[in-house]
Length: 216
Image 1: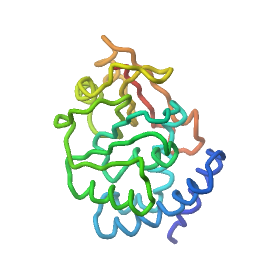
Image 2: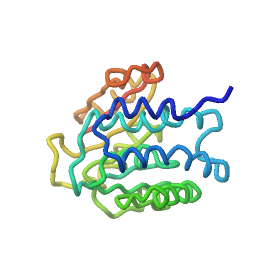
Image 3: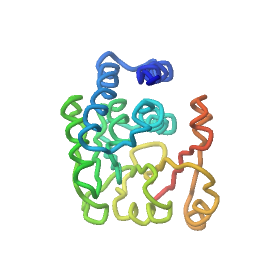
Image 4: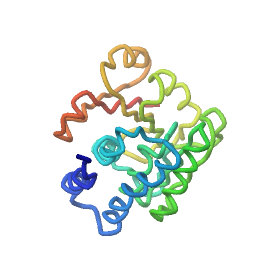
């Protein structure tokens, strides 16, 4: 029997009771929008689409348990794929500016269609690689893109010198599994912090998932 994707949506509303009506409506619309677009342009695996709200949306929103992005902050979602973690975080932080980039044009096409359908005025999607960007950001986000060390090297030239948050500007990644070696590679010369997502959310899916922050 096919799973009703709205089951996991209710979990998000429980974890984030502060969401206003507009944000709740955007999240309700997000699921059916991705189901429809994914049937035309496959950016999420077929087996994962029924668990979209848990494995993609709530996973993305775990970053909001780690940091509260300020209004007018500039956040880059590097290698966004179909829009994660950028799209869910843009819903949660409507006054923060999110740039979502990916080297695959069809993925950015999906990002921009989702942006228009949900009415997200704080999101821009660009078909670009990190090396091509000339802009500066408060934080760079990434979700299962590549090793931590490579992400750090890409992030260095993209980081703004001015810190606007209590937590200094840096790289925030969503990763799974044993990260001992990856963290060791970057922690020799940098401050690195790891948070286990199961500390925030009780679902089994998050037991092996982490947020890793590298101050840049």
